[in-house]
Image (cartoon, rainbow over all chains, first blue to last red; front, side, top):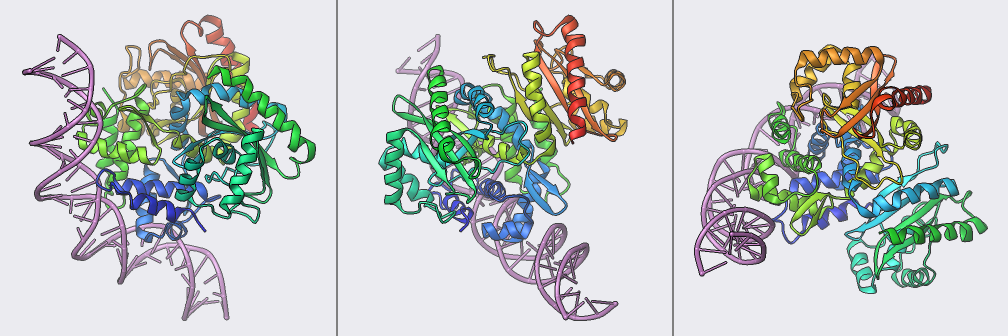
Length: 261
Length: 261
DNA sequence: AAACATTGTTTATGTGTGATGAACGACACC
DNA sequence: GGTGTCGTTCATCACACATAAACAATGTTT
């Protein structure tokens, strides 16, 4: 049900346990668990999710708290703002981020919908940038890190070779996030082929029931660099606007900044 | 000269070494060192900066690389994009970020200068948000994490009690980043008093020779939440524009969104 | 209000592992 | 082809991480 244990195992059972620091890996999986959890989490709940002893979870949370990677309000933990600082620095030099960002901002003001930029890392999605319309008060729901159940994820998968897709799915699996999630490989493969043909990917409640999204892959001479997406609730994204207008805007946006890369 | 060793010691010599994970702390200090270094860093150089053995540095870098916290191009390392992902999620729920962000974006389009939002954590600056004019190609230089040598840092210090400022400076010291850095406490104290009076802080090559900045503290019933700043090079930020125009814009910007908090 | 359940925190212990220096191999540079 | 530097690997040992169990501090139930 939760990805965290599998991810943890993925780390722990690494063939090169000599060349890596185990404690760091568990600390990172704590951060991942916090990222995946909506809202705040207590020590025991987190320990259960990761299948680690309470005391271990406590120690790591405490450590991460002291360095600012985790925020503590009362007895509940959440991701800390130091991560935002490091994140800003990390992407500051990234060429894709630097060229795509202004176009994504424009995308948001044109569509009045949340939008963002996703890249792939180790078979999982990485949200490089995300923004919402200024007036919009509601919190934008984060993307699932699984590629198979989000518009940008599918856009990326559709631009990779079948072998690579197989490898990724072997590693991550295809968790059923909602009843609309494509958890069957052949069904997903068919969808991916259609996405590759059209150059556009749709998401209809596959990771969250209320969420919809449209995404376009960013490809440069054969290889995919990432995907740009526009997201929203199913009541705001529907019919022609969802099926045609926003896809068209997305495609022309990517076409516009692709040569700048 | 480098902050990293002192920070490392700060962690290592923690009075509660029983409640924290040492390995995680060194991994974090590796990330900090990478953040502070401009550009990429090799294993040996990083090991020297942190005063740790090469093999240790290698192991941590390798671990951080496998989880995507660090990027490896050839034999050089830099901060990884996974941090941007976590950072986005971390600040997504932060009220200060959420309300201040659109105003900062507007600030950038009005002034055509880089701008950002800084908060304080454990006596050091945390860049919560940072953005540059769309057309501007150059990389924005990140703020130093030290509070005493940046405009937003001084704006925050000026809004804290003298005792708290003393504590912070005891912990971090006042490293001399350039020849204009205020590394004398009494001189800094004087400056801070003037900043508190005027409600505006200036930075004139105190952390980097070519850099200038203006910052305004965000205070809510006595306590300071952070600071908004506008930055730029000394040739673009000067005379009346630097001394009066941008300060005025900054103050009115903060006044505008303060009630929204 | 007392009994209970559940939380976070602390402690004690053995074992695994992270830190370490030295040796190795891979390149550049002169 | 030597010499310097780099990243990587290896072997060793103390020690610190992971763990379970005891503890304290909650909140909940009756």
